[in-house]
Image (cartoon, rainbow, N blue to C red):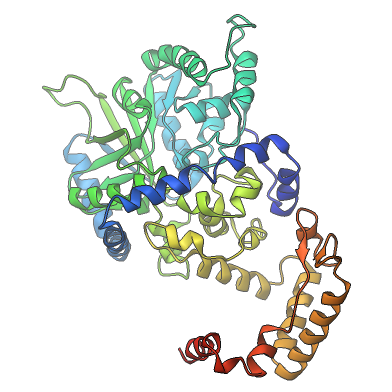
Length: 484
């Protein structure tokens, strides 16, 4: 699979110049965010459910070892096998061994961000086993040799014309001039290609939206039904999941399901919600003969009890991506790794190291929208600021940026000098602005290259406050806010 550069700054610049990408991203604003808002409005108890879901995951993380052991016990009782893996390499080797023991030539896969995280597709191919992505979006990007650009909509960066071109290039056994103008035609072609893969697969590999300790059950949430075919048709089913996916009971799982789809796609519930428990039993009509669960740590244990502990509540709904102004401007590939958006900017440095991901904590305006829509109420802006603080202390990143920040700190610690400097700056900018706007401005080219910058009018906020704004209503509000 083709990887993107870890340099977010350069990736973002390239993304802003990519016209097809910008056209695709423009549609995101009118899609998932509006649908989420409407779905939440239809459910009066939605905010209470968010609190319940948060509390469930908080409790789990405080007792993670107990619930993982309980889950393992139930899986074994049902006839399954649990494999504990510390690193991505351990997980890849475990999956390969299971596939080799099954004499597998083909592995069908449903969408799994953990499988992307450990790069299992490349590893299987290197060892003579064909992995086949069966989620439509994942199938498309596999043909294009690209990583996913979104955690729930991996091909959201592509237009239907680009998908049609991809199918023409990949499906060379079909007529070159066949009509592929409509989404339905693309869907039918992918379905026909995947049908034989489903029927001939030796192993099915799925992720897990949740693992239920009470029953040893794996919960799969999809809109296409491909996960059902992946876990039912092959003789061997492998589940790969990170350790924080555990929940205590079936009731807890249903609580989280009520906020998951609404937050992700604006649906009351996803089209397919599947509960898998162990291999086929004596009187079962279908299901795998072997059932394996690969539990992956890969840095999660180090996050427990740290400043980033709350990130482990994430249920991968994608709401923070859908509402993030940075993600909606540059797309997922700019982040340079598997995860993207605000959750990726927090999680990736934990998994691959701050040195490798030093740009990502700055891939945010800190507007707070991500936290306001997160179904698990994860304080993403707070954690992004923590990474920025760590980066500054470690003296990573641009020397110029560090000196600029140090200069700013020196200035704001001296209120009189700060107010004088701001008043002078505002006065000068107000005078030189052409018709009240700047088309270009030194030190602000990142802004003015894409949009005008309004010239300031009037005094600074602080000057207005100190010069008598206290008496009106806005001044009263300012004073109240200042005493909190």
